[in-house]
Each structure stands twice: as C-alpha cells, then as structure tokens.
Image 1 (cartoon, one colour):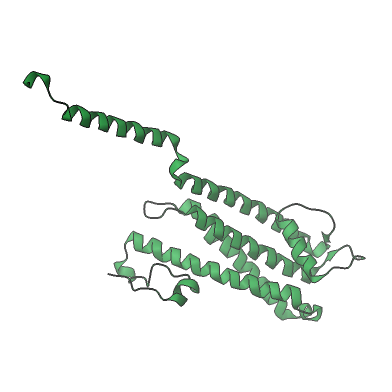
Image 2 (tube, rainbow, N blue to C red):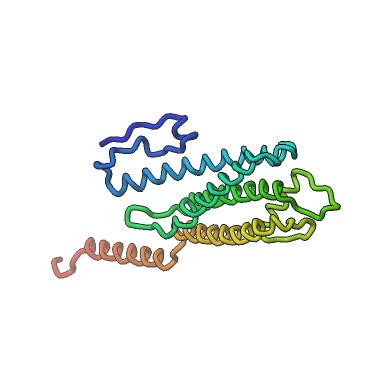
Length: 228
C-alpha cells in the first residue's frame, strides 16, 4: 500500500517524514519501524514545546505564581514527561537494534540534547519552587537556569547551592546528566561506524578485491601465445 505524501505542517510540526502509516494488519516490520520513528519525532517536538513553556515560566513568572498549586502540578507533569522521554526515546534506543531497525547516531544525539534541555528547565522550575542559596545572596530568575545547567553538567562552581528540600533534585539531576553524556558518546560511536572510512580494513579488502578483478580481466584479454 503506497504512503500518502506528507504536507509541510505534518513534516515540520508533527515530525512526520514517512507519510501516513498503513493499517496495523498490513504493516511490515519496516513499516512499523518507520511509524515508530515518526512518533519519536513528534515526541521530540513536544519536548521542545515544553522546554519553551517552562523557560518562559522560570524567567518571567512572578514569585507569587510559584506559591500556587497549579505550578506544582505543572512541575510534576513536566518531570514525569522528562523521565518518560529519556527512558523510551533516548536511553533504550541503542538496545532496540534489529534487522529492520538500526539506530541513527545523529538522530540519537539530537534527541539526547533535547532531553538534556528538558531536564535542565524542569529542574530549574523545581529550584525556583524549593530555593537555592546562600540566603544572603540575591538570586535572579536566570540564576535558576544557570544553577540547573551547572548541576546537570556536574561542574559545581560553588557559587550557588540547593536548599535542603531541593538537594534530592540536584542529586538526581547530576546522575541524569552523566547518563546523557554516556548516550552522547554512544551516539558518536554510531555515527563513526557509519562513515565510509570508519573501517580501514574493509577499505583495504575492497581495494585488494578490485585489484584482483582488474588482474583477472587483463589476463583474459591477453592473447594466448599457443594459438598464434
């Protein structure tokens, strides 16, 4: 069954690249892999939208708004999404490799960066809810993003520290940041493995095979002296 051509909005907003999927009963393993790939693109775009909304919330929402129950609900929902996205769209992808599905290193690296942005902004919301110190130091709204980024990368400059209620969030973010770094390294190996020069021995094998073929053709075209 032929796939329908995707429109501009479906491709760039919904992330659909392979057209509308065929009915479930008629799907081949390749169709299933393409359907899941399009669905992961949709999840990545949804994550970017969540990052944008939370970033606006952290930087521009007044402090009084962070005393409301709605902000706590938003933070909990965004945290659940960040965990789900990292588990099912990022860290498990290298383990899903099959004959019909081979992970794309560049795609995995991009999804990992999106997941990292998601975690940084989500944790920044928690830091603004729970507080960072020291208490005598003025903390701007940008400092919450800065502290979350430093914690995610495990740099730890020491100019800010989490308040006691926020310490579990900071510890978890540091662990998640290290896991993201590991996935980025795995994505780099996947990209390197797909490069033409990634396997020098294979290239030498091809060159020697090409040389042997040329020698065989030359011998076949050489006149036989016994027939002269």
